Length: 296
Image (cartoon, rainbow, N blue to C red; front, side):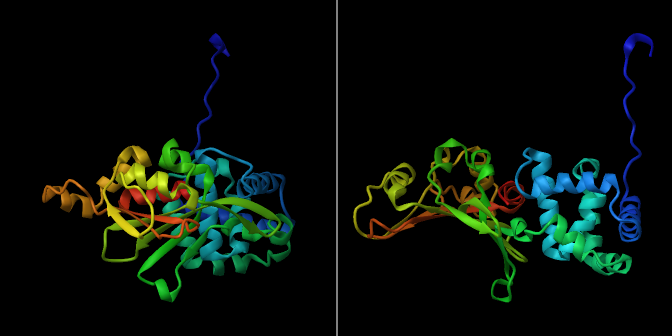
């Protein structure tokens, strides 16, 4: 080629219609002819993402995408999507197409894919340890119908969300997901289904760190009585949490009233030196969604 310049590959824009048609066509082809080389390549990529062997922002987004499909549509639908929409193709989906694709899967994905065939055996072969997608817990039971609750966060996202100051003090535990044992953090995020515009973030601090964290946050020496204090020192949590807290409607109301010390952050502990401490933070909803996508 003249001048030694390489021609850039141009892709046709992906629409929800083309993505959906390709998905159903792939489902029919898999049922009739088995897995094509391209399907296997996409599935191997999905396996790596599911098992945490692929890192980076795109892998995190793709894993979250598969998580939602598995939770809302089932493992067979997730298998077919993984075959058709690998991480490379997924990266070409615009945010609008991703949302529309998920909405359509929820509304008609199970029925549409079941018409193409039974994928149970393929699913067992490629994703035998389905629980690995759900070692963090999403609680949408009738008892918590006013909120959607996420628990047991990915530790990989801690440093980005919280910075260096406090991420090492958050209580961590090993969660068993079939054959996989995964390190998770004791973080709970509660999103209102309707009404409130703020999100609640709850951190569990190990007993050995309670005194140090309480001193840094509230300049309080922890000795005996259980107490709660309400103020914030942003450097403790990092810029992402601080900015999300400032974006909450509760903090905006406090600012309007010239309240310097906020009730958006509180910490609770008891007189028992062996018990863990709990920090609660009120965050703005929009920023909370961004942080939730990183943690879960």
